[in-house]
Amino acid sequence: MAVASVEEERPPALRQEPASSALLVAAGLLLLLLGLWWLLGRRRALQGLPPGPKPWPLVGNFAYALVPNLLGFKRLMSVITTGLVPRGMEISTSTTSRPMSAHLILTSLGKTYGSVFSLFVGSRPLIVLSDFEAVHDALVNQAEVFSDRPSMPIVAIITKKKGVVFAPYGPVWRKQRKFSHSTLRHFGLGKHSLEPKIIEEFQYVKGEILKHGRAAFNPFPIIGNAVANVICSMALGRRFNYSDVGFKTLLSLMSRALEICLNSRIILVNICPWLYYLPFGPFRELRQIELDITTFLKKIIAQHRESLDAQNPQDFIDMYLLHADEEKKTNSESSFDEDYLFFIIAELFIAGTDTTSNTLLWSLLYMSLHPEEQKKVQEEIELVIGCDRPPSLADKARMPFTEATIMEVQRMTVVVPLCIPRMASETTVLQGYTIPKGSVIIPNLWSVHRDPKIWERPDDFYPARFLDENGQLLKKETFIPFGIGKRVCMGEQLAKMELFLMFVSLLQSFTFLYPEDSKKPSMEGRFGLTLAPFPFNIIALKR
Image (cartoon, rainbow, N blue to C red; front, top):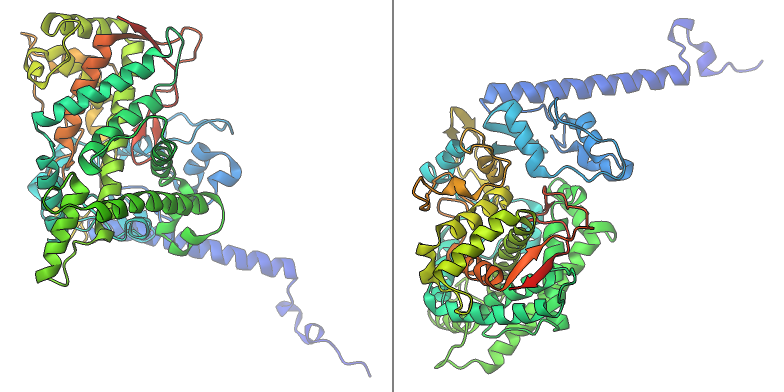
């Protein structure tokens, strides 16, 4: 007699088709995910966290990072998968449209959820501060609580938690920053002694620009080389020729690294750190950039070690090496060593080159697109300085419109729009909300500088907003392009010197025009850790 199968022996009520079983399993998983999603949103309310869109289980509000590059609908998919873009924002489904920049998404979210709102990276809260009051309350009034850096895998992997920009707040950071700041001041930071080097560097800039005559050219490499060489004069004791292949490669690598660090796939490293070591895509590219930059800078440090003269230190590297040697004599556990020096030098290049060069490039772009404002600056230059004498920092006090124009460019562009993230070192209350220990804090400086409650016509380029009724410069506490608080940009004084002297020198020597046959670039900018203009060409007419 044949043996009946198990399925045949079951009562009819217990028999199920395979497809039906699969549907039940899928429905169960969906209900589980929806339940977890609801619970996560409920948990936010119970904990007193700021409002915000509900996170997905496991990945939080960054689920969109898993799919947009595969589908090519970055703006649309960010809405479908996370609801990150509130209603009313125009969404393009074109596969050729650029991804919406993080600072613009977060600014729009602030309009929906308020000046303090929360997102989640995995299960970790990320608190976004969207107006000046919230930023000031956190970074100034509660500076000790919000001065630490978040321990995020992508940052920890690249920086090894060393340096003076990304390192955790504490005794080691304080010693390293104090030494770095005092040593840079010794070599001219914030002092008039650095002025001749900036003016000298401009002569190379002028020579490069003159080579193009009346033809349109790309100003990016010229400006980038010039700003980097000012840093080189203090940190390395030398400048590089603009044709130096290694120097040009270094600047290109640093710019590219900043851009891809906020690639949606790279961000996933903060959820799954092992992704950083994948042998393809932006992961592989970023590791190769890290290796190339390390090789270049460590070679320079090794050369300084070989030629070190204890009686005659020439630059920052020499001073650091001497200080490290002294520290080792009395403290074998000292944090001062060549490895830490490497990370400080790398940060000086990144923070000191990319930010200032991008601001100058934005300045040239805005001047070419606003010729009437450019003419006013040039008239003030002629009145105060003339056509032949190079500018001096002593001229600033008598050039309010020029200063106002530089400030308006900084307000409009904010080259570090989301600041450098902070972390809550303890649970606290901010603006009435509970901020748990370990939360990542994002001060949205872009939103602060485009706040219509502070700035009239915030999206218009209007330098006169920084002048009073007598044409004198207005100091506004809400103008914070370098950040505020204990971790304000260490190179603020250097940047202000370079911006004024280079900007005035450029407009004293040239009139900048935007080519009539060229399409105007998007003024949203190209977002990485810094906000750079999209590539553009420009015409410089000798004055």
